[in-house]
Length: 248
Ligand code: SF4
Ligand code: SF4
Image (tube, rainbow, N blue to C red; front, side, top):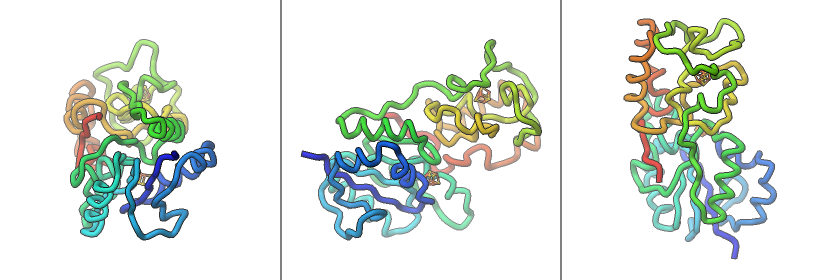
């Protein structure tokens, strides 16, 4: 029997769900499951019992809390899809909206981080779920898969005074005095932003401990300009409401 699947979206940009639809394996994925609820492609009002529920986005409305509680009752496994659902995401940068990660309201059985979730990792995570396996989160930091990583490792006590690079880096952003959060961010995205000359901002979330304490430790190993130190959003652009979720 095909696994019964629910995919839904709370407050989000729909980027993570769109990534599912854009997967090369999406046609194969469609054939291997029975959707009991997937409002983006099918009009259905009722949430029935299901094997796996994937929830994208954070909670910003009372009725969304009820929706996730209902899903928790009906689903054998609930998976938080994307950084909004896991950590609160970029919605939490708003001064007007409270962004609540779903795992503040219900227990989750796993999560697929990223903003949006990286394609290859998303595809392998979905196949793992369909096979009854755990989602394989990398235990390493982003530097481990970054082509810019210097052979001798990232230098310590370098001066960081830029958030945006002035030129294409030919070596590690940190060595160009640009802040890159790769050392404290979970690998899994294949360093796509770095390949596009954008330093890591931490959307995959932390590996161990919470992002804030990792940041404090990281900043104590390098020299960071005062301007950057007081730039609030760099500390928790993606993880403001919740800065650590234990791996299940
Ligand atoms: S995690 Fe990023 S891509 Fe996914 S829904 Fe949230 S804002 Fe959009
Ligand atoms: S700090 Fe950034 S640029 Fe340097 S190796 Fe790590 S991920 Fe790559």
